[in-house]
Amino acid sequence: MTIEPPASGRPTDGDGGRPSVPDDVWERFVHDHEEAIRASAPVEPSARARMVTARLRAQDEQAASAARRKGLGRLPGARRRKDVPPAQPPGWRTGPAWQEMNGKADRKRRVRGGIGVLAAVAVVLFALNPGAVLSRLPGGPGKDDGTRPRDAAPLAAETARPTGAPGDVPEEAPTLARPFAGSPAQSYADGAAGIVLPEPRAVGAMSKDQVAAALQRTKDFLVASGLDPATLRGERPAAALALLDPRQEDVSGFATASLARPDREHDPVLLFTRFDPKEAVLVGPTVKTRGRITFKEGKDGGVTVHADYTFVYALRKPARGSKEVTRTIVRRVLDTELLDPERYQVTPDRLTLSSFDMEAGNSACGRYDGYLHPVFPSTRTDGQEPSGPAVDPYDRSRELDTGDGADGGKGSGKASGKDRRAECGTVSRS
Image (tube, rainbow, N blue to C red; front, top):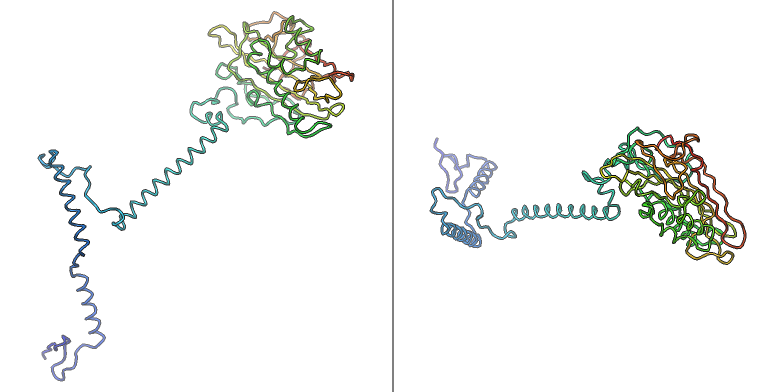
């Protein structure tokens, strides 16, 4: 039997002209062939696409012509220069390519933004605490310089009297690079940063601002008498003297006489830390400090400020090339008062001392020439031989008695002071 397609293209049988293919099969056959034909048929580019293509081709030819004029075209096997990229339409016309380039730009902007934020944070941290920032840099200050133990954090500020002496630290001889190594002072604060003032409040007849002023003047005196470089070099302690009330004649008279003609009864080291520059000089600018300041209501509605501080000085001999280091530890306890000017003859903005006490560890006994005399391991002192008990100069739990100093009469009162160097003993460590 021969099957011939009808005019419509659908095959039929030869007898009755009935379609030999079911209707649903034929429709699927026709539909599938139409999609295949459309998919494989060439698509005529639009007029706009032809214009863009022609323009890009012209730009490529111009770039190639320019390269040939520069001599590249005459070189054997010359190819397109890598720095002459093929022309392309502006990014906003390139669809997915624009999306990719924009994504890269966004990533670059995010990276630059992140770097900018980190830089801003670093600037703020440096402004707030440059020492901490620099100490984290390789080779920066504070790295293994003896001001902090290698395996311990700095101590928190002292707010109450300790219950005992500091614990033992690994024995290590002090050096020029690590002048506080082998002592509890490694964890002490540096200089004035260790003199932390309590939060002021009104007491008695004194306002909060007046109490704050009394606290600040007491700190200023501790700094001027125990940390000022000129004072430590044995010069006249002008900054500390300027804080004392000249109307408190017993204190001002004692300071003047002791600086002019020091002796056993009038020695300026009771008030000021001084070293003879011909005998000892500081190792670097750092003095370690540890202590506390408190206040309470004083007599007649005034305020009394109590300060108890230990200062640790690292020293060397002044001779050129000297590398031997020793330490002198000075503990000072003093009471200052802010008195009502309606009742007492006082000078505004000056300091009234009611009592002062000092103890020096590792200083030659029996010498009253206006200086402390640190003892170096390689030398012997020419002064009095130690005769008292051994004392740990870092033990801040020990009481240092001070006199009450006030005579209760009209005036600023007489201050009492005590020189503990007369109780010449030995130090258990320095």
